[in-house]
Image (cartoon, rainbow, N blue to C red):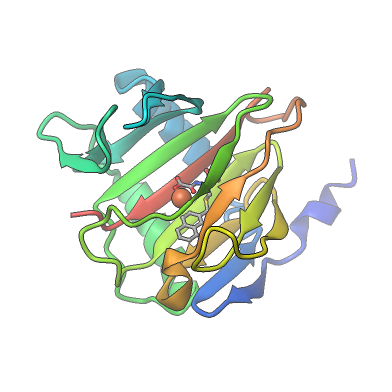
Length: 206
Ligand code: MD3
Ligand code: FE
């Protein structure tokens, strides 16, 4: 019922210099993306990573591609034993990057975050990729979350942006080093993902 409301075409919202929200960009790919995510998690189960400071994260993570996070270590390790980044994921990330104005993006890895009720991600910068000149493509699946988007300093004021099922955000240029985070997830049940929110980020890490 009322499925026609969900057929609205995707639209773009500039967020900051180099950053653009592609609302509903993934709307026709959400089922395939979710199947890929499940396939990855069957081979590389979600784990709660421990930060270098010794804190266990509320977000559970897995991923595919050559570069993966390693618990207790700040940054990536090139993994010889990894789940391959599938053509479907690669092509999806490239089409989103192209739509956002980054036509030459070739990711080598996909990190997958799983948020349960109350899971959050505190403000941080993503700067462990070898080169920060490549954009990051993120896709949100399942329950909505409040994304916090700040500036280049941790104490800069943050904007709140609701990220919903099928939304894609591409971060490049000046936005690449902005502080960002996710507010504690509100409980709910999503028809595709159940009690969770998933976020996939495509990166060129190595
Ligand atoms: C802004 N993930 O995995 S995605 C992360 O929803 C991460 O799981 C969040 O932050 C999540 O590192 C946010 C949106 C995002 C991803 C990467 C960024 C925003 C970004 C890199 C630079 C600036
Ligand atoms: Fe991040």
